[in-house]
Length: 598
Ligand code: ASP
Image (cartoon, rainbow, N blue to C red; front, side, top):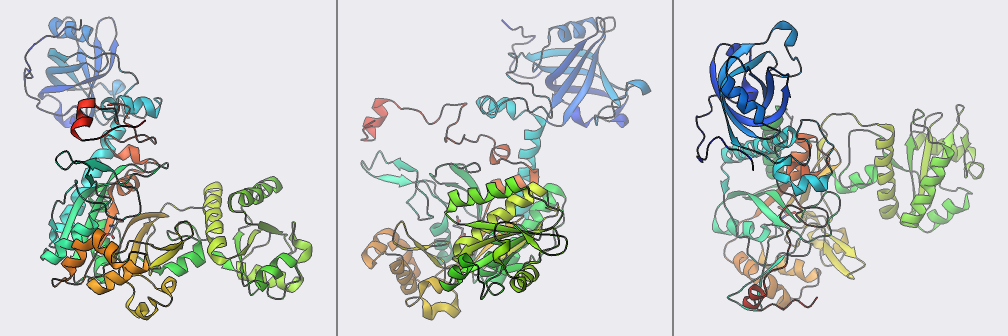
């Protein structure tokens, strides 16, 4: 049995200082400290303990001659015991100063000590920088993992970012309003989490995928400028960086224009970076149209930390005698190229692998040519390409001597994203990215895209996004050509947030839903409350939402969302600590009129 020096639930004395905050200027002060034993070194006579709290560690010294009672406590203390001590801060002698530690110039000579709680041996070391434990183990003992300095710093930085967000939005006249978690399915494109209603047997609430419709209703109500740090739920198969529940900075404004919302969002982002990292961003961020982003980068969230843009080489290869390219151009397809600088050399094997991968992944052909120092080409297609087209293609693609040109022929919509992916992989391989923060806006997304699976139009953003006013006439005739008043904020190849101006005219909303395959009755059944509300003087409005977890990841420089969330779930949507999700009692199911048929 562990030994306790007190059974009182109260600490014997209050803390005067945080361990990690003590400095040379505190020398001579009497202090009272609490904290966990980070390490303990018994030198036969003196015992040294590093005592940890969230601000850091400080070295305690226990002297058996001077303070035998305190020393006896130190003898019993083990890793992660929680101690309360009293003592005096003293300067360390010159040769024992620890320059690695902010508190390294001092130590605390302990005169009184109590063990407030003993600890089982921790399942993994909680020393800063130790990455030894597997993630499964870290999540199983998450409360201990969160004691580590990295996790403390990540979650506190996340909090600072949200302080920055709130400070900015409050200053701009936004009101924070909570919306329900038990609600109705809203279409953000993912599966809903359902919650059975006991008092309405057979009926279910859906957890919100986002407060989209509720925030629009708040505009109808006159709240003018709303925000919420909203919890959202999406039942998707979890890819590496997805969580079933996540937080979103959710914003909606009345009378909004694209320029107005993007300016508010830029100010908010700048405030978050300032509060959390002391980094000053300089809005306005550049903006490019979706069509241009796809053309130049093959992505709607371009990573601008390096150049290497895609080039349309169709004109350079016009009239080519190389059959594959000639056939493609004859079909109305395009030829795109991506030029790698001479400094980035891929071996023949790497190029062959890249070609083979592309073929299996996309059933699309990739080919390549290597420029020699004098501008000739080598590689599988070199002998099919005449001198003039070679010169034209090299100039158009920006191919340097000794550089490599990757080429694809096919429908632009298919080959540009494929080359866009290669662009990212090559930047990673050759370390081409700078370490600046490249923010940008991607605007003018298409309103709809065609889903081959569902054989109908689907929304690129969501069904409440307004069409671009210049494209209204195309809505029924050529819906796929209609641009949306939608915008995404992108940082270094990651989507930080996105939103749109909304439809506030009930008839236009019904038309948009009809184009998506919801006839009037079905539209009214699902979204009747919104359509009805739009009939009562709904002002023009628009908004945006940002992923808090992604923002925190960027600010903390972590690779995983799980490292900026207190209690995340695994990729199987499981919490290894509590065991959620779990079976429930038969009685509970009966009350809910639910039968499990597994
Ligand atoms: N509701 C959207 C989302 O969750 C964002 C928005 O349009 O404001 O992605």
